[in-house]
Amino acid sequence: MPPLLIIKDLSVSVAGKDVVRGVSLTMKEGEVHAIMGPNGSGKSSLVNALMGHPLYAVTGGSVKFCGKDLLKLSPDERALAGLFLAFQYPKEIAGVPLRSFLLAAHRTRPEKGKRLSPLQFDKVLTAAMKELHMDATFADRSLNQGFSGGEKKKAEVLQMKILKPLLALLDETDSGLDVDALKIVAAGVNELRSMNKELGKKKHNSKFTIHNSSFSALIVTHYARILEHITPDHVHVMVGGKIVESGGAEFARRLEREGYRKYGEEKEKIRFA
Image (cartoon, rainbow, N blue to C red; front, side):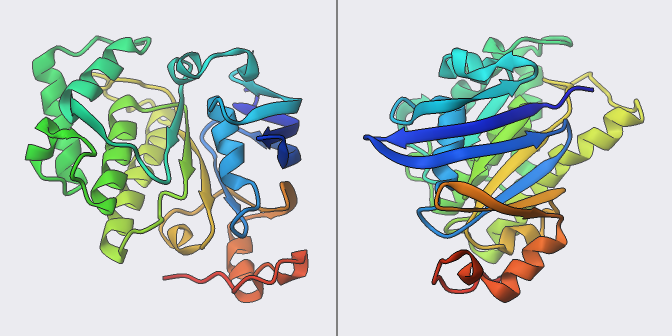
């Protein structure tokens, strides 16, 4: 199988300032990678550029996603190809109920299986909200409007559970979450990740499944506490717009002890909650 994502020497600028400087990264299908680093190191800029945010100008390098040139695709085409961005600060959209938003998003996606009827979709939505401990009435409220910080992050994970993207870019999803909310959000990501094993064993039941492809994630975080609940396959440290070191899951523990000082960043040590 070819890699899911290949980033080669990617450089990105914002308002003329270089924020990502020659980043290279390869992800296989089904993998979870974590990018850690101090504030202002370019982590969020990287994922925003991958999603096609207009303020982030790619000034060099290339990105292949599922064998396609990602940089030639518009943001909506990237989403249709299976890319998903969970925002650090999810936006509020007045007048658009969460249920309607998700149903419309579902209907725009290319389907490999049977398209769900509105009744089947409601069953999937209700079950997913229950798993995330979300009040069912939130489905009929405007997207993120009046939601707490934790509820907004749960709504982002709900979108992933419904749409099942090929690659989720999680931009500091753990930011502002208490311990209980963090565990619920992590459990939702882990459930999507568990699909990979089910698909490998050919036990996947597509009766009420919206997308039956494998799930991968690129987690951006400053602190390592979310990695207590989601075990990554690879951990990368990003400093000054560059990936300066990589390792396995145990690497996050080493960073907990050492912090980022060895990379020239006098930041506080990262810590687990």
